[in-house]
Amino acid sequence: MSRELGNYNKRRENRIWTKDKCIKLVICVMIVPVWLTSMFYNLASVQRVIFTTKLASTSKHLFSPSHDLQLTEHQHYCDVSLRNTSLTYRFIDDAISYMKFRPRRAVLPEAYIHFTSGCSTYRSNRGFLMKNSTKREESFPIAYTLMVYKHVEQVERLLKAIYRPHNVYCVHVDGKSPLHVFKAIRSIAYCLPNVFLVSNRTNVIWGEFSVLEPEINCLKELFVHKVKWRYVINLTGQEYPLKTNYKLVMILRSIKGANDIDGSAAQIGSKGPYYSRIKGRPPPPHGITPCKGLVHLAASRKFVDYVLHNKTALDFLEWCKSMDIPDETYFNSLNNNKHLQSPGSFTGDIEDETRDSFIRYKIFDYDYGKCGSKYTVRGVCIQGITDLHLLTTSNKLFVNKFMYEFQPLAYDCLENWYFNQVKLEMAGQLEFNTTVYEKSTIVRYRYTPPEVV
Ligand SMILES: *[C@@H]1O[C@H](CO)[C@@H](O)[C@H](O)[C@H]1NC(C)=O
Ligand SMILES: *[C@@H]1O[C@H](CO)[C@@H](O)[C@H](O)[C@H]1NC(C)=O
Ligand SMILES: *[C@@H]1O[C@H](CO)[C@@H](O)[C@H](O)[C@H]1NC(C)=O
Ligand SMILES: *[C@@H]1O[C@H](CO)[C@@H](O)[C@H](O)[C@H]1NC(C)=O
Ligand SMILES: *[C@@H]1O[C@H](CO)[C@@H](O)[C@H](O)[C@H]1NC(C)=O
Ligand SMILES: *[C@@H]1O[C@H](CO)[C@@H](O)[C@H](O)[C@H]1NC(C)=O
Image (tube, rainbow, N blue to C red; front, side, top):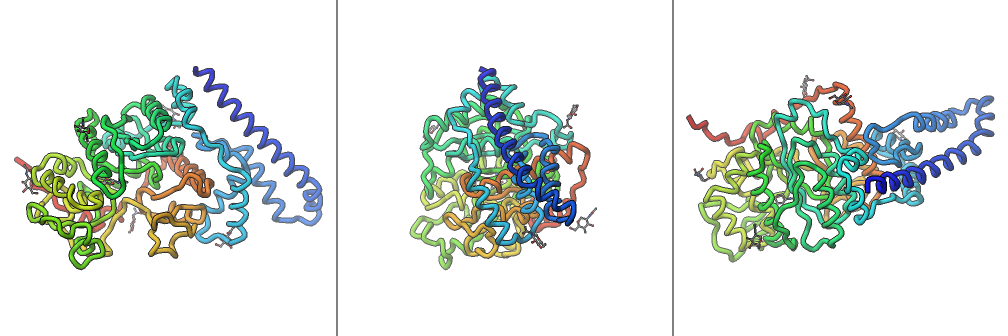
């Protein structure tokens, strides 16, 4: 079986190698006469072409995230988009037509069954990091819940970035996903220690309790897992980290038990735009004011303990079953009702719009000007090459979101950037300034339960 995998990869590489060779040949044929001219006229632009060609043939990528990156042009587009705050229209057009004529070779879900038949070969071929984490990371495990429903390869690439063997990952594959998608993800999970599928699969229906259910099932299983994680982060298959595991650990340590879960009572109150979600329902128990917020979170272990086991929280969960879109209210309310004094919760002004939140880089259509790609789906900006510079310089932890078919270069470039950061860390570059997180309002106004003596 592992021979099959080897052959598959060889065929893949051959194909890439041939294409690579062809492109180089064409470039050479075109360049030689011009190059001769440039010897006389010293054309700077031509020198650039030769330089980038050389760069591509000498640079090997440590974790070979995408074979395409070994191509000169690919690398060039990444370098420019990562570096430049605003790209020229000419460059964007060129990049888009480049992507059009070089569509990504995606791995079919069916192939994963064979890929994963030899786990250690699979892990090393696909570049999973199995060692070389720092002591600091190992003593601060992170738990993840990962909600997925399609695009196995995208899920695999996300896992590859966030995976460290000392962390723990609970994956839920939507009950509606095709069987081959489920099987592929199950076979990937099987090869990765501490990655498991949640035991109960749910048919997720947007807006209903079924969105919250797999999340809570995952949290339950994570909580009793042998890995004593310190924080939990939840993701969907369409997100990507903007911080390495090392930096995430530095950040989560620096927020000192605070949760990053936003929420506003005004938004869902009787004068708010989301009032219909709770209108006509009985009042919530325990004097809880419902809040509406984003579905993304970073929560401390103590908070999750509270959410899963405290009677007040469980009563509120029952109440949430009667409302619409409870996933934007449940955790958000428990973190933003001062009187509950839940661990790490927010005790400041919840309606203050300047309140800090680091968990996601996410642009909504009312911020349309900030959506570089100018492409939104259900009101959320889909990241493209024009967004890369902002993504990589942002202080946010993860980005939402990537559609796997849209501007595939953007994902490749971000992935390459991410693994370069890891590489630098492994080479000993471990300074990271956490001041902005430490001094944030979520830390300043967090509720810390008194120590039990
Ligand atoms: C990159 O940015 C510089 C200015 O910062 C600009 O002159 C140049 O045209 C940009 N390059 C591309 C390819 O967009
Ligand atoms: C990872 O660690 C091993 C020793 O534990 C070392 O030999 C290897 O060079 C390291 N790899 C990287 C990429 O730093
Ligand atoms: C799985 O889900 C069903 C229906 O939601 C529920 O009745 C059952 O108790 C769940 N099982 C576990 C192990 O959580
Ligand atoms: C994250 O968790 C919250 C709380 O369970 C849930 O409402 C939300 O849907 C989850 N978000 C994602 C992206 O999975
Ligand atoms: C449960 O939560 C309520 C309200 O947040 C709190 O007053 C109570 O002390 C908690 N109970 C336990 C056992 O922690
Ligand atoms: C870290 O960043 C803050 C501002 O965000 C700055 O004031 C401080 O000097 C920086 N610390 C170091 C060691 O660079």
